[in-house]
Image (cartoon, rainbow, N blue to C red):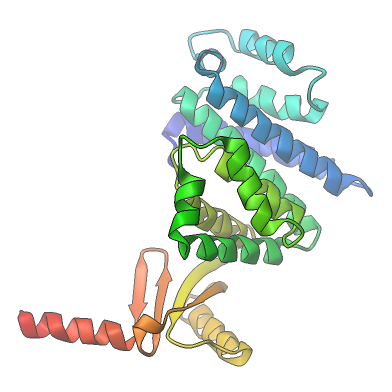
Length: 278
């Protein structure tokens, strides 16, 4: 997600309000309440994506912020929880660079809410892993990826297709995040979207993500050793996402952010061919 300066400031203010709401959500029903808040924020994303005039009105910087807040209350009071309206009031009274970036901001708040829920429930690790693995499964099935990325397909049908894959197999937070992604991709491919969600979960744990392709399966000891080595090299915690890729012939291909460490046989052969050709 790329935001211009005004939108970054607006999102920062909204995140502070969200943090206040989250900090005040305690007790035995806290997880359920955060799930409801995240789901309702996603529902507003869907509403504004389908209503261009409404999102323009709520992002209109030439209008009085109080008028935009009044419009919000008239639209949502009694239909969503009070805390959802409180968070959204901070959103609509701020100055956004464009209507689209306002919707991007609400989507970001929804994702943050659900990841906080997973963190509090002690399930953030599993949510991150589930998002990554599902992304690999879809990336490995071209027909499935096309079906889930088809802009002409009915959103309900795409959600049902995902449900057939993950129902009863993933955490509720994972399911909500994935359902929203396929329902409202907003110009983003499902595989890239799942990768971004997995990275957000890793960032929530203040870790970087190393995407590792290995010619053979790495056992737990090998993964722990690699994770420790990368953590030492980068001077920060590193989370591994490992994928077996026999085409490498041997060794590892590691991608961290924009940096690629190619220790694979295939990579070394390709480098040798380039040197010989040059």
